[in-house]
Length: 74
Image 1 (spheres, rainbow, N blue to C red):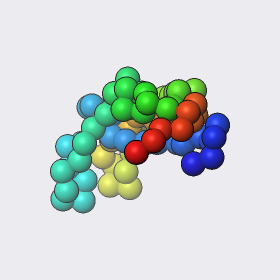
Image 2: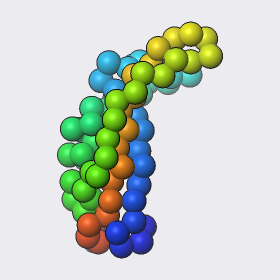
Image 3: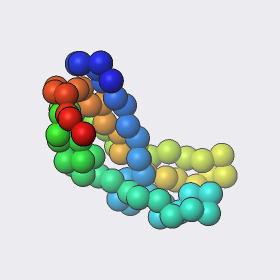
Image 4: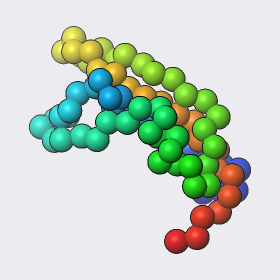
């Protein structure tokens, strides 16, 4: 990612489903996503969203926009 580049991430929220398409999923709150990205990124925007699937099932999502603030060496 370029310096000062941005990433948009969406995950299932803590109250979202624990499985999707038969697979176990990892759920994150906005704070957990910010913590996960804390090395080298700053969250510049976030939102929670309740999505309704085509089957009528509600699924909670967490969204963040994170801007790169430094290069992290691996």
